[in-house]
Length: 362
Image 1 (tube, rainbow, N blue to C red):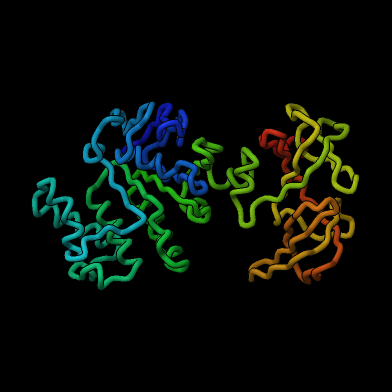
Image 2: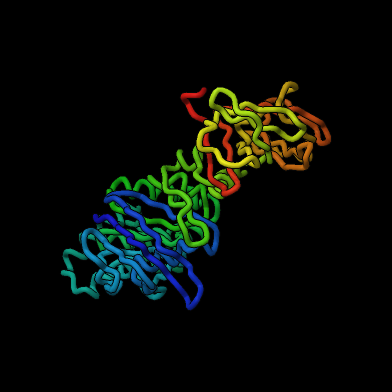
């Protein structure tokens, strides 16, 4: 088990900067998830950690060893790819043993590692089958097992669940979480799927355009996003934004003018809040229909999702907003008021920086 340190790491392809001076510390035993949209640089970063891509600038340390220039095989890590990359002519047992034989590990040690990993991943009864005789989930478990038998200091996962169907992804997520608890190993996982990130990570690194927007626990990323990008990217649906103008502050709190000219006294501290033009950030579960609501809009669509119902509104200024509805849902075309849970209302300045409700002001 080993920690990881990235120091001012950059990646360039000619004049194109994919990652620019990124620094990050990963503690031993942590399950860290790189999350972001396609093209944000998360896979390039993982490949640099693995030694599959050259580092344009900066240093990578695994444990206390500088591995920036080290070959992949000298980094004491194992990587699980999006595609299983199993040898089709070999049995599961032979696939698991292949890398160990290449480093001339003793036969009895290879047998021990295969026995332990196959028991842990429930592959015991599949050891004599070939990949063509396995389901997609079983093949992915073999790919994970091939990493486990190496007993590395660091595990890297490059979107390993993206080729599985929804039900199988859910089961495999659970298996990965259980594997992390059993091994206590340091794991770094790359995904664009926020559900995978929220359910697996001890900390999430949200990336955008080759830079880190926020590093925090899943709960903090969701409830206290650092930027407007994080707020919009995290959540299904993401946070809604209402354009507002700052009015006269009261009692240390920011007061904003809503679409339709109403005033809202937020629980966001006025100190440090720059600019007059702001965005009010609201999640659907923190809004509900109310005749006395501060916002007003027309229902454009209603979604019944089983565990909850969402109503999609157009506010008086044309801004879209999604709210959660309990009980009888409004009808399309209805004009309704919206009540805001002020403790969960955020303000974003012109630079996209977040300002959150302060408990001391509640």
